[in-house]
Length: 544
Image (tube, rainbow, N blue to C red; front, top):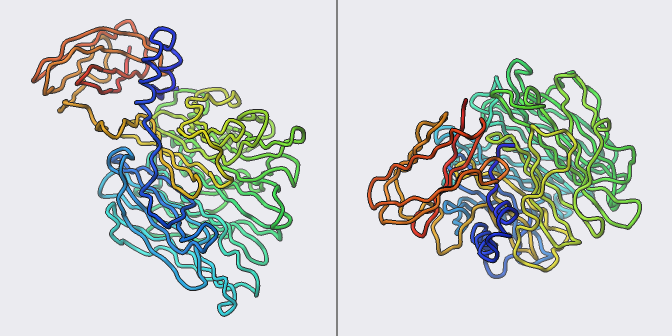
């Protein structure tokens, strides 16, 4: 595992030595929960988060003017200060008997030239005049909300009384680690379409949404409520085209609370079957025990560093109703599958997450290719906590994901059933960003978020440089400081353990501080410089 998780591990490692001071540091590191741009008289749901290549945080959501009213508005906001403040990017609305049914967003593109903000949403008409008209849209925007293109406009009319429309939408991309055919990245939209036969439909593109191929890949007389999609990448010698993994739940009756979960793979560039596993995989053996799946595939196109890196590893999270104890749990399943031309989650077994009582629900996960970690969140009602867990690609398939933040929300009250937390990674400042629903409010918190009175950039420091990097024995951290300071230089390994500590004086002006890493094993590390006026981290790699 190569991710550096300072907030949780600071408390674990130093609380005995530093006592109350460490608890204060952790609180400052995560900051307070932020209510995303609240407006009186509005009720929000379907919160989504996606972080762009430059660290800009985008939050999408639906809103209505009453808790049980029609959700006729969607909007996307952005933050350039680590979530402290949000401003409007783009929005739209419908009227009359039409309302929005589903929403998803993704900020894709590794640079300003390739960047696009994609917004998918669906509507349905509850009025009898339009006979259940349903519409699905996918639109692209620039970083400031400027309209780029309408990519999908799909219209259907259902039989009288059948007003469910597109129940769920899921956008995914490989822009952080593109596959061999991506130009410049692949963009896929998976939708759960309700009709006389519910179905799964995929729009696939290898050219950033410019050309989208539509394919229906599944249909059944049951009811599909949740769908999740994820694009995986691997080294070209293993599979040049990557995979799109899709997971969904299906119910025998719409009022049924528990059903079954399916998983299937297609090529992400055109949604054709890769012929490695043409049949569906049903998670578990019950048709009435599961729901709300989240699927995530690994993206690793560089050097092989551990098990699974030479192929695409799949993780599926889903809710299950426990047979005893009357509680729900989140199950974690994983598989290395595609090189072996098989996908068998049953053989790899399951791991239950959360407590043994109450409800553990709403799982969501993303993959961080910069550090090869699965980032997992879910809601545990027994502890009234939103949990943040990590599963490194290099670890064993099954081991239980490590809890790095037992509860990243400040409130102690219970959340309602619509919490649905979402997580994404800010690769610029190595920060996990979270949104969730709380009593019709959109809430935000983030790893490394600082109090609103403190900037989210190095204080009184400019022109930070680290050289050489990678290094073998000595690395220099150079910067310009506006004021003098006494600092502590700490080096942390991938588990968050401090392995080197020293003191130094910072002068006003140019500084070059050498750090001796000769005794450290090969790997990735974080160097932290911390004082009253200087406080920032840099990442380094130690080589032989």
